Length: 292
Image 1 (cartoon, rainbow, N blue to C red):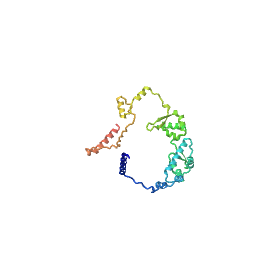
Image 2: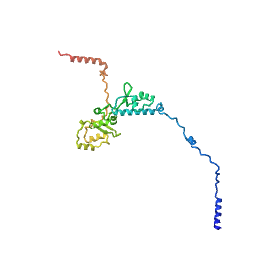
Image 3: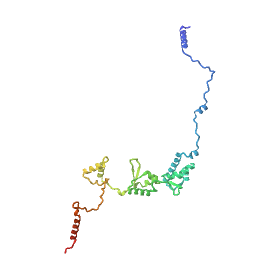
Image 4: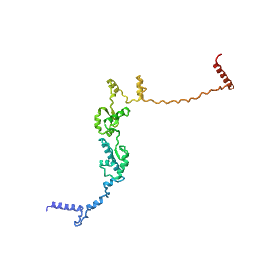
């Protein structure tokens, strides 16, 4: 046999003896069975809450969120109905039928009819208290009533009207505004970008000279207060603006009470007071006597 192979064989034995070995378990020993799927699900599954029926949930006394959800749906339906031109009042049963909410509990129905709808600012109740209708911001039904309202605001100096209030109050609003576009001015408010409606008074229209427009646009007074404007006008020799603007209240002086004048007796020669009165009486008598 080759001596090189023998040396390699001896070296392999030495390395095998030096490396640690792990004893294998007997194959006859069985490992414990893994936990079944049902047992693990029973341990991990949280306790389940009792199921709530829809009818039971709707009749719960503490479900305030559900109550106000029903109320919000009714108010939205009444607004849409008014904007479509239907303004006749409805009973609570008719409202619930139209909104598909007939399955609500009796306690919620009593709350709607006796408290919620009566106190809602967007709902109007008939005098007998049995029927309800939508309560708009303005009582306008067509284009004529809208223009009448805008004219009154213009004459009384009340300003404009919000477009969203008109849309809520006027049935078929978009059609009416389109037909009356020449009689209405639309202004966008810079604060919240809401549209404001004004009456377009054509009698106040007049032409302005272009030179005056240029002068008006060139004068910037945004960063000047009233005191600086008055000072500038005085330097230019203009005093016509003094009587305009806010006037400071002048405190009123109290008038002294009228006192009766009393005849002051002479301080000196008090012992001659009677003689003085007699002398004055004689003098007056002589002046008033007629000459003989």
